[in-house]
Length: 327
Image 1 (cartoon, rainbow, N blue to C red):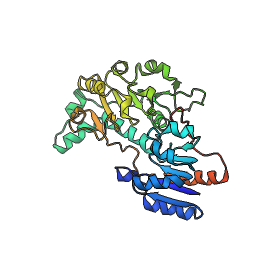
Image 2 (cartoon, one colour; image 1 turned 180 degrees about the vertical axis):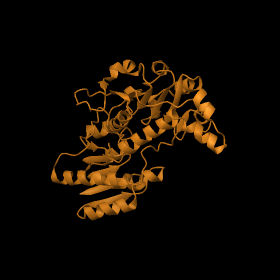
Image 3 (cartoon, rainbow, N blue to C red; image 1 turned 90 degrees about the vertical axis):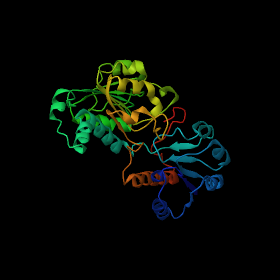
Image 4 (cartoon, helix red, strand yellow; image 1 turned 60 degrees about the vertical axis):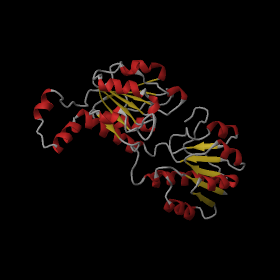
């Protein structure tokens, strides 16, 4: 069996470390592993690959991969893979969903606490050696999460972990997801389908966007939806930038309709230095890094190890992707 590892990416962190490739070689001495470090190397190796551990593939590569039977995405999102071509060839696709759920959920709660408890103002004042007790008790007082309404757009693995933590703070949680036949977690107060989006946003204090990026989710949150949120609400996006209308978001932040935003993703990345988001005092910006942690690749490779074992034994694979649905 030939396995291609192809995770070339502009950000070094998202490239499979050589130590993890060596670990796979130790675990599967009978498998021929090719670690492609360039697009050219991958284009050659894909021709004889039975399995690919990849962050991206092109339609042309899939066309050349006559032996390919299974692709495992190193990320949860699979939109960068040519899903239509893979489905036409009946090539199995799995992903790494769940791997980043806990760190991203912690990031969500961390950003929410920064804005709700006004740590952003306190840190600015600390650097300037200003005592702002008057300001915090008069104009910009901190508020408690307990009793507030959180709506989670996309109640998948990330949404579940966010909901679990929000519930622990005493928040009322509404989840939006397509699969209403699945059991409702005890820490979610209500679950509705996408057709009830506006209802779920009405009276919401915190909107968390953790839905997959699909054609149907582009600009799903526009000015009309933002207007349904409670005045001073906080928007948190850890999914994809194009799910929310960025100019509408900026306008609502500038005019005070929104109380703040925690943004890990943007319409264009890296975020343009000229973007007004950089200068807004009620915005927490992170560079698409909410899921980063030291042991990330340990978990990715352990998941791939288990799936490769299952593949060799003819057992069902974990984290199967529905190529037609896109997740």
